[in-house]
Each structure stands twice: as C-alpha cells, then as structure tokens.
Image 1 (tube, rainbow, N blue to C red):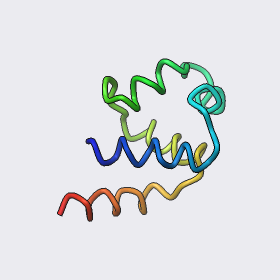
Image 2 (cartoon, rainbow, N blue to C red):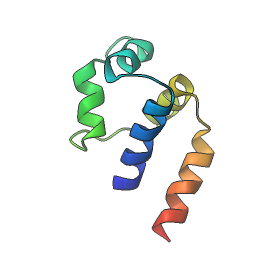
Image 3 (spheres, rainbow, N blue to C red):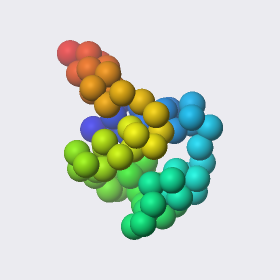
Image 4 (cartoon, helix red, strand yellow):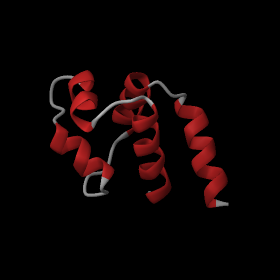
Length: 73
C-alpha cells in the first residue's frame, strides 16, 4: 500500500527518528535494513508490526488507517 508506506515514512520523520533510531526503539529483530525494506516497499508489515510502529513513533493507528482510506476513495 503506497499511501500507508508514505505516511509511515512521514510520521517517522515527524517524530525526528532515523531508520537506525526507529529500529533500535522497536527492539529485537529490527534493524535499519528491515525498516528500509519496509519503507521502500520490499517488505510488507503485518498488523502487530503496524501497532508496534504506531506505539514507538507515536501516532494513533486508527487515525492513520482512516487517512489511508480517505485517500483511496
């Protein structure tokens, strides 16, 4: 989902986080390359990862999904 990918990158940058910092905050199993693969569309994220991203970056997951839905309409 292109819109979701772009919004996640935007939210990360708004939070003042680099890919490396985000990976560190996400914890075990996350690396800068994992974040980069997700952001460039090579890796899909599942629901649990999306929720973890929202917690670490600091956005409301429901609001972001509403925004994605409104763009797709």
